[in-house]
Image 1 (tube, helix red, strand yellow):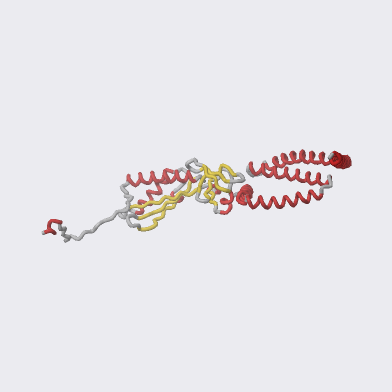
Image 2 (cartoon, rainbow, N blue to C red):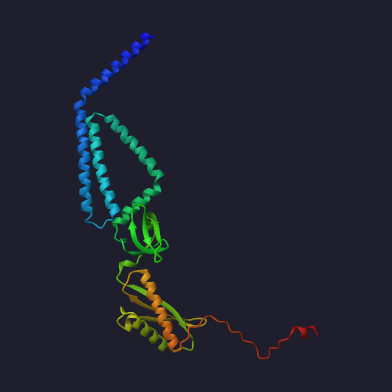
Length: 296
């Protein structure tokens, strides 16, 4: 038993000795590798700060600037790591790491397919000019002001002050209506008047009323008035005019103002806004028989 223990102990010492000899022989390479890796980490920090400062001059969102600077920093550190593996003559380990990284990357990509799609879409949205902070947009059935854009979603503030978070992937793949691409927005008001109304007078009255209530309209020619159809109970018309705003909320407010003003003008001039009614035309010789007479 003692002989076996002594033999094992001697083999262990021999192995440790060989490791120590290898360590001493490779000590210069180890020191150089540590220095190279330390320098790469320091350089990555300075490069990251430099890239961040350069990106501040662009129109990219803050989250995108941070992401790109981190990607550059990680790239520099990885280059330093590869140099360290080469200095230490660990080419086989390097090949193993690269092969493992490929397999792990494929597995992670499949598992996080949705998240990666949103991340990529967020980067795309940061570069295009169709959406930026403060724009009033409509997408995927939601409408509001863009207040944030990160790697996961676009945040909208709706007219009722609620927040909606739209995944970037849905925003990129679906149509976007941006109300802020022009300096003006069109207001459309639909209404109807009775068949007894003077249509020329109604048209002039509506134009005059809108002109008096909106300072952004300079003359009546800027107001479009169109009769649309002879409806079941009214002659329907549509009025269009422009306001100096790109916010859908301001458009709704302008439409409300126009409705109140037009209704008051119609009331003051005796113009009727009819609602659907049903008229029963009974024959003059119609005889109504009561139930008692039926029994007789």
